[in-house]
Length: 320
Image 1 (cartoon, rainbow, N blue to C red):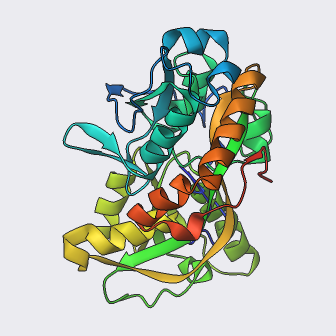
Image 2 (cartoon, rainbow, N blue to C red):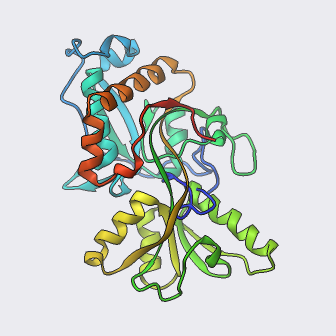
Image 3 (tube, rainbow, N blue to C red):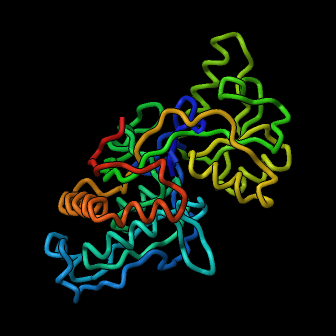
């Protein structure tokens, strides 16, 4: 989960997406996975017997045999990934299903805490993590927001782009227009995201300019952050642009929130892969390019109103 900030003013993931101390390999941030919820959302009907799929032979032998790619996600991030009717649905599960048809295997999603996804990936619980995770150099190298080494890091296959956005109560009672307007204000955000980090940077910029620092309230999940903002406990929430737009459109029938300002500091969302699994990284890159070329990718984004995040080509470790 991306992430950049207002939709990532100073930047922040997704998520941009993005979203705090930079979570990485040893732990997207500092915490481990919470309780896990298994769900086969966004899976492909292909299996290990479907070796006629275009890219099946390029998969690691272990995955060919299993017929499954185990995916770690945080399914609380509509429209990117969320739970509906007992299934994990959204942009990411639908993209994964399209990738599954190219690869001839099923993408099997399991939901857990966002800031524990990378540590679980590198421990072998998942084959990949796909949860609107902003690709950053720090996450690639396994560093926290202070440059401390937490783990081996991960490789990313970039498939989407998003910036940070600010959402406020309907009517914008505090007249917030940009991240700079948040100096001295209380802001709600999900912990372990790049946009939490964006808020921390902005807070320093506020004090440097002689203004009051931000009062940042970080929550374990995005739903709690939204609740805090809706109740008036915070003047604004920060999230990945497509997520903030979806929140504003759906919450209380569109009467709870509105998005203010422009999305900023757009960065890539990537599928995270263990650095030792170069074979899987390579074939996922090829699969993303294949669904872009055949038009399936565009259909998925159109379905969810996420066209602004489209990329023309996959990239490996394109984040900065």
